[in-house]
Structures are given as C-alpha cells and as structure tokens.
Length: 266
Image (cartoon, rainbow, N blue to C red; front, top):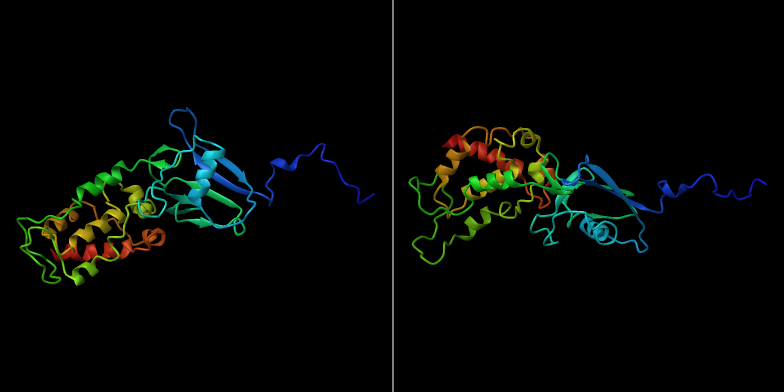
C-alpha cells in the first residue's frame, strides 16, 4: 500500500527545476517591441558532459531554440573583444569563459552593466570608442613639445622606412599592448558608471599610458596636458574592479596610479 506508485494526474513536475537540466537565463530586450526587458530561460540537457565555452552555448541556443537572440562575436579566440558580457555577475569574454554542467546548474548572462543596450546582449560602445579616439591612438612623430619627459633608452632615429626601438623599449610595453578594448574593465568601474561623460575609464587610460611611454612617440607633453583637463583621470578611487575582471590579466588600476604620478611631473 505504502509502496504503491502515485500517478501524476493532478501534478505535473515537468515545469519545475530538476537536476537533470542545466538552466541558462539570458537578458533580452528588443527596441522594436514595446516591452520591458525580460529573461528567457533555456533548460538544456547534455548527454556527453564536457567543458564548453559560454559562446558555444549561445550559438547552440541561437541555432536550435531562438534565432532572434543577438550578441556580438568574431574571433572566438579572445583577441577581438567583441563577445564581452556579464556572465554570472562577472564581466568576461564569452569565448574564454568556460563552464561545466557538473559544477553549476544555473548560468545568467547579462550585457555589460551600465551601458546603453542596442538589443539583447549588444551594448552601444559609441561613447567608449569616441573616448578612445580622443587620446589619438597612433604614433605622433613630430611635435612642438618634442622633448621627452621620461628618458627610457636611446632610440634609433633617422630611419625613413621603419620606426625602430630597442629590445628594452619594447619590453616596457608588455602588459599594455595586450589590451583588446573589450570594455570589461570600464563597465565594471563605478566611477565610469556615474561619470562616463568625463572620466575616461580604465581601458582608455591604459591605452593612454601605452602611447605615453612608447619610445617612438614624441608627443608626451601634449598627452599629459590632455589628461590634466577636467576629471579624465582623477575620478579613479582605486576600487580595482578593473583588474579583477580583465580577461587578459592586465592591471589597469596600477597603470592609472602611474598616470596620476606622471601627470604631476609635468
């Protein structure tokens, strides 16, 4: 009597969360629909448990469940920075963020926080790239203030074909040139959330420092004058969220401290 099987007539547990499925919750918003943002929950069941990237999951959902799901992607190798998004509360690259269905059962994916949303997981990075354009991200070989503030090593000059530099000068750029402008660090910075129109943010400031110490660049004074204007650098409060979330393991917080020191030397 007590071991008799109870038939599922009045209760259907197919809509309840069970350990047999892996659940992915994705932020959705469509500007062409007059709806507030919502979440889509996709229950997935893996026959062969193996390590997958979050980007692989998004492709699987887009190809098999909802073709309207929108997200950026390009290289799949952590080089372009296109697939930056917030995964389980941490800004990261979907192509580098792996997961295992045996360790976690729920995965929540948001777009980058405090960014304008174009659709679903796609953010509007217009302001971000406009700030990048402001720092003049190219070598400036002629300048009225051609005197270098920081003397690194003697550069090889008078070469019309190439702009060469010594091995030591090249070594100084390590930890800077690897930045792929994915905006994970800037989107995790509270100072950038509230002052995005004034404060340049960790990613752009790291790029400024890269051009500032490059031995091939002759416009160091002008670049420092640009930083001393308004709150482009002083709004950093050393929270170091930028360093914690950087997918390339760079240290923008330390670079910003260097920039604050150099700006006082001008």
